[in-house]
Length: 345
Image 1: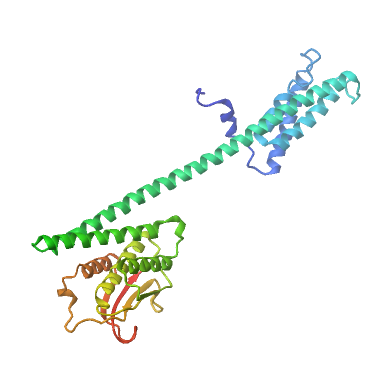
Image 2: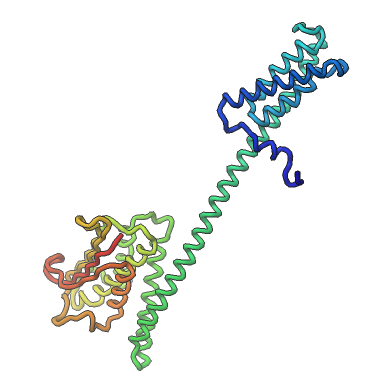
C-alpha cells in the first residue's frame, strides 16, 4: 500500500456508517464475539494483567467502522466480559479497590478512544461536505465563466454589426460621419443600460419592471416629460440571450417612436405589451403601439434608410420571430404606429 493511501482510508472503504442499525450493531456483536474468542484462546499463554488485550482493538475498530453507538455497545460488553472472565476473582463480578481501578482505567481509555474516533468522523464528514460544496461552486463558476464568454462574444458581434450598419449610413461629409458616430454612441449607451438592468442581481427577475425602468430612463434622456410609457408584461423568454435581444428590440422600437411619432406634439402615449398567444402555447406576442402622427402615405419599410428599422428586423430574426407593422388601428386612440412581433419563448 502506497504512502498516499493511509490504512484508515483502506478501512474506510468498508465503513458501515451509512448502513442501518441492524448491520451496524450486528457487526458490533460479531466483533465483540471475535475479540472474546481470541482473548479466551490466548488466556493460557498470557501472564496475568492483560484482561483487555483484544478488547481495546475491538472497540476502536467497531467505532471506526460502525459509529459511536456500536462502539459504546462493544465497550460495555467487553468491559463486562473482561471483568467476569479475566479479572480476579474469575467467573464473578466481584468488586474491590483493585478491580475498581482496573475498570476505571478501562473506562477512561475506551472513552478517549471513542471520543477521538467520533470527532475524527464528524470532521471527515464536514470535510467531505465542504469538498462537495467546493466542487459544486467550481462547476457553477466554470459554467458562468463559459456563459460570460459566450455573452461577451455575442455582444461584440452585435456591436460589430451595429457599427457596420452605421457605416453604411455615413455620408461623405464630415458632419454625416459625426452624426453617425453620435447615434452609434447613443445606441451603445442604451445597450449598456439594458445589460445593467437585466444582469443586476439585486434587481430581481421581473422583466416587466426592467422594461418599465428602461422606458423611464429613455424618456428622461430624451427630455420628453409629456410622453407616457405603459408597460404590461405577462410572460417573457427564459433564456438570458433572448431576454437581451427582446429588450434591445423594445428599446429600438421606443426610440423610433420618440424620434418620429411625436414631432410637433407636446406628448403622447407609448404602449408596450408582452404576453403569450392564447391559441399558441409557447409563442409570445410583443406589441409596441404609439398614438403619434402615424406612418406617412406610401410608407415602405424595405426602402426606409432608417438604421433603427434595420436593427429591429435583425433582432426579430435573431428571436426567430415574425415581424409586422402598420397603423395603430384604434389600439392607441385611432392614430399612431403599431409594431408587432410573434416569436417562440
